[in-house]
Amino acid sequence: MSGLLALLDDVAGIAKVAAASVDDVVTQAAKAGAKAAGAVIDDAAVTPKYVQGFAASRELPIIWKITKGSFKNKLLYLLPAGMLLSSFAPWMIAPLLMLGGGYLCFEGAEKIWQMIVPHAPPPEAQTQKSGDSAYLEEQKAAGAIKTDFILSAEIMTIALAAIPPSNIWMEAATLAIVAIGITVVVYGSVALIVKADDVGLLMCRKGRFGVTRGVGRAIVRAMPGFLVLLTNIGTAAMLWVGGSIVIHGAEVLGFGAMGHYIQGLSEGARDLVPAQFQDAVGWTVKAALDGVFGLALGLVLIPVVVKVIAPVWGALRGQKGSGTASQ
Image (cartoon, rainbow, N blue to C red; front, top):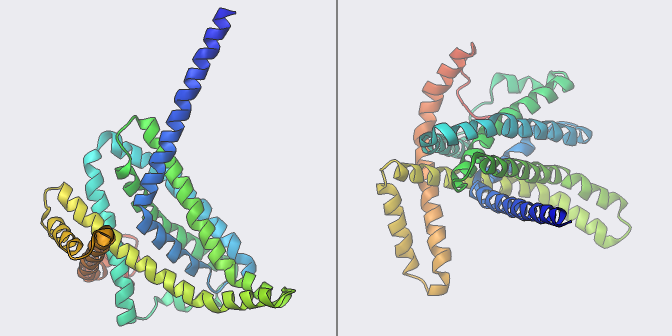
């Protein structure tokens, strides 16, 4: 009997340790996921465009295809790669983060440049409407999954850098929770955004009360502007996060002049306002300056990507360069 009690006591102790470990993993995953917020916002802002032009009945199936591809990207490819980096080449994390940050800066700056100087879409985009709908659906989903891979790589690398050093299983579990949680949040949000106008239209037509129909009309009218706002927020988030990643990575590599300069301006702005507003003002000024740096870097990268990287990549793939590297 005493042996059974001792065994139960051991089991209870193991359960407590396991529960504490799970709690630690969830806590670390939440913190790591928060660090990747900018790339997450961009992911949510980019995805709705991939269902434009398709019947309403195909929107959710397309999003589900992209969601499954995103899970595969994060859990089958990027998580093992992240664990290998963490175990055997942790020195590569900062340069890879900077590379991803530079990509975010390029994407954000390219979107702004497209607004200022619109350029023609690639030839394949001009012939999509005449193609087979099932084929176009597969092409759109495949393109979205490729874009997701790039954004997911950035998210997973940011999350990996934010996880405190521990054993490989704890890091893998934390990264897996980040991957699953972010994918559910992003594509769940995308599904709600994409179907919001359909819900609003249904409320307009079938609502039994005037208030219900009014809310439906408000949703339908608000969605185009909301999508534009979401896109703008995503662009700003890309520039902010991309700029801050590059600046922080440079500091890690021993080039901290820009980071110190921005930090000094942020602290100077804090001193100009009452104490209760100092944290908000300091954060806002730093984020804005990181974004300005990200925009400047992105504008510098546009000709490099368009004139050098995209043609070389197209040649390697046996394709003619399209003049842009963005989806």
